[in-house]
Every structure is written in C-alpha cells, then in structure tokens.
Length: 639
Image (cartoon, rainbow, N blue to C red; front, side):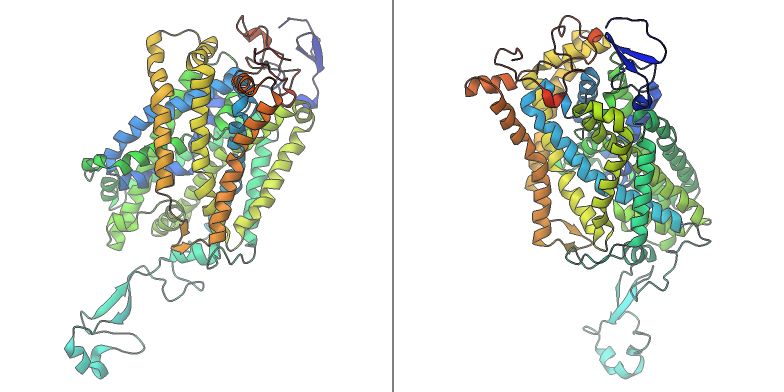
C-alpha cells in the first residue's frame, strides 16, 4: 500500500482519501485495516474468543458428563479428543478468518463450490441465537426473582399441587401380600383423611421438588405439550426484550464496543465460580459430591465403552463453538501477523480447564444437597435445564443467605450466555458487512439493532406456554447434525481440495515459517484423524437418533417434521450454492466444476501490503465485493 501524507481528518487507503466521519466509528485511527477495522487490543480478541467458547454447556453439561462417564477417568478421552478434533478445527478456523479478513460466507472465496457451507453456518447461528437469548431471559427472570428475603421456590406455596414435597409421598397402602391388613381394614390400616397405613404397607413415590414445580408452573407456565401453545408469558417476554437490548447496546459499535464489554462478561463468571466453590467446599457433604464428580469414585473401566468416547468428542466439538462461523468472524478482525496459533492454544485450554473447574463448584453444592436430604449424589445430579433451573436453585435455597447465592449464580449464567450471544450476532453482522460494506459503514447501528429486533420477534414463540418445547426442538435439531456436516465439509474443502500444504503456506505468511516437524501433527489431524472422527460422530448420532422428548412428553409428529425442515433449510444451501457456482462458470461440466474448486480471483490477504508474490495479481477485494465476484474460467483467470 502506498504511504501518503494525509491530514488528520482523512483516512488513507491506497491513493484514495476517505473522510473520517461518524460513518466509520467502528474503525480506529491505529487500525491496520481501515476498511473493516481491527480489535483495539489483543486482550479484546482473546476475551471475546474465551467468552464465545466458554458458555452454558461448560457449567450445565460437562460436569454431568464427567460424573456419568467414569468421573476423573473421563478426562482422558476428553483431553485426547481436544488434541485430535477440537484444537485442529479451532486453529483452522482462526487461521482462515485472519488470513482473508473475511466472515464465514465471504471467506469461501477460497473454494467457491463450498460457499453454501458458510451460509449453513450463519443460518444455524441465527436459529441458535433465537433460543439462546431465551435461556438468557430465563436467567434474568430467576435473578430478579431472587431479590427477596426468601427464595420463592424454597417452599411449596400457592402455586404448588399435592405432589409438591422434598420427601417421598405415600400414594396408597400395599395389601396384596398382607392378610392381616384385610382384617384391620376398618381399624388401623388406613385413615381416609390422612392415608395412615400399617407399618410396612406404605407405597411411596418421589415428590416433586418445590424448585421443579416453580420452574414448570410459575417461571414457564408450561403447557401440556407442543400442541398447546397457550399465551405469551409476559414477564418472560419482557426479560427477553431486556436481553436483546443488552446485546444491541453492547454491539452497536461492533467489536469496538463488544471488545470492552467482554472485560466484565468474560471475567466475572470465573469470580462467581471461585466464590461458589469456596462456599461449597465449606459445606457438609461437599467432599462426597466432589468424590462422585472426579475423585475416588472414578471408574476407568468406563473407558472401554464407545459411548464415553463419543460423549468426549461431542462435548469438545460443541464446547469450542467450531463450525458455527463465530471463530472465523471474530478472527477476521485480527491484524494479519497476529499469532493465531498461540491464541488457539490459550483459548482451547482455558475453555477445557473452565469446564473442569466449574464441575467442582457445581458438585460441591450438590453434594451438600444430597447430604441434607439423605440421598445419594446420583439422585440429585441433573444436566441442562434441570441442573440450572431445578437442582442447583433447590440446593441454593437450602443455604443460609440463599437469595445472595442465587443472585450470584444466575448473574453468572447471564454473563456466560451474553458472551456467546455477542459473538453469534457479530457473525451475522460481519456477514452483512462483507456482502454490503458501504451500506454497513453508513448504517451499522440501525442494521445491528434491526437484527436484534427481528430475532426478538422470532423468539416470542419461545416464551409462550409451550416455549420450552420450541427451545428444546431447535436445540435438538439445529445445534446438531448441521454443524457436524458443515465442519466435515470445511475440513475436506480446505485441506483436501484447496490443499493442506497450500493452506499451511498461507498460515506461514502470517505467523512465520515453521519447521516441518511443527506441521506433522496438524497435517495428520487435518488430512485424516479429524475428518474421520467427525464422520464417525455424525453417523453415530444419526443411527442413535431418538424422537425428541421433554419432561417425558413426546413431541407431536408435526413438531418432529418441523425440526427436520429447519435443519434441511440450513444445509440445503450447500448444494444450491454449488449448483449456482457451476452454472455461472464457463466451459463444459468438468471445466466448470474444476474452476469452482479453485480459489476465486479475489482470494487472498485483504490488504495489498500483505499479499507478497503469491497473491500480487489478485483482484482487490476492497473494490470487488463478494456478491460481485467475477466468473472464474477453467484456467483460474477472471473473465
């Protein structure tokens, strides 16, 4: 790039002067890329990546998986899957976004035939963003409900029914094998009012915890099934609106504003987890809970079961948020020579260690809950919604100062969710910016707020009385197979078609040349191990497919069909875009396919000064946006 002396109220790009106005408030004077902007500091990027990767699953899914799959023994397959699948994919996506300074759709200039993969990633992110903010709304509601002298779910109240109890409930007297009970039927066998049975003839069933009935009857006002939509739960709708207002306020300047917010939202959860761990460790029964989690109860024979390895691979894959498009989007704002390799190592290790750390905080308090209720830890441990909104709130309600601990816990869930939500929305806005850069410069704020408004309106169905069924349905279908398919095609396209060695040369343009032995492991993973693992997980998940059920209520046929339609809508763009690209190319069918399997003429580093000899003849992406991409002939030259 030519170096020109410009007045301070101008910004330079090549030989063109661009007025520094409010239209470019997302671009700083010291940014390397004056067209798209860069992260203000390296720490902004790292905290954003940590916040994106570390989400609710680290708190409400990983501890349960560890307990369920052999305790501490589970960390062995978990670490192996991190090395074989998680880290290679994470490093690949970070490198890809940083090299081209493009989001998840436009970055497929690297392989036009696979541009639909990027569209699939963005569409799935949109679906997940809709319901993820509903979970944040649940956290907001519970946090506000905790501002009372006594937690409202501590005892069975006006909203409870006869099944509400912390202890087992006598349902009837068993007289089938007790002859003497027949003789005494009018004496001491049963009192019609109090159901008092002869000793040993009682039949019990577990009562529903106050926190469980509060979750279903008050917080959700849950209907009998997906068929019964009911009304919009107004207070959840207000909490959802507040959640979207927070997201919009944090993102109105793009990475310049979100990069500052994450200093709080990414760090605060660790403070809360530490406080909860210290408090939990002081409680009676905590050691038993931790023992069940990762201590003396570890079962290494579990490692012989294929299900354990599948759970480890799946948890790593989803926990690191690969193939959602967010890693590419966030990395696209890095400076070209940023060391993305060390960043990938730091973020992945932080994410995994956070999962382990969170388990201690969760199980110490669940151990105390089991102790005071006289149950085994296995009887109180839960996963997902049941952990976050039933089991853990129930345990907190039994602690002195329960409202304080409850506020801390749900505020932690709020910040964990917001970090991931910021990156998801940034994925959408980055895609819009790459496709319509001039419009985005002038209208970033209204476009960002407009996206939040539309997604809020779409999310209203998730805060009806049947809302929890919709949340579970979208999570079951959209956050599963589509992401796996996108990840498999991403690895195959970049490593097998574009060329793994060529991609490594691109990375070395950014971070410097490395010895061949450095790349030996990454080649082994990218070329064979990682795609084979992902294909195995995909096949396993399809073979083991089960009809979605929530709270033992099966989904109606139309709900299952709708779920399949959502995922088909996301992945159908992969063949559609491939066909469009082939039709737009020239030559016979073979020449067209070959030309679409070559990089577009505007593929390469975004800024001219980074292109070197390898990309010196590329079309300037600043002047040529993705939707105006020139047709590439079989020779690889632009027509």
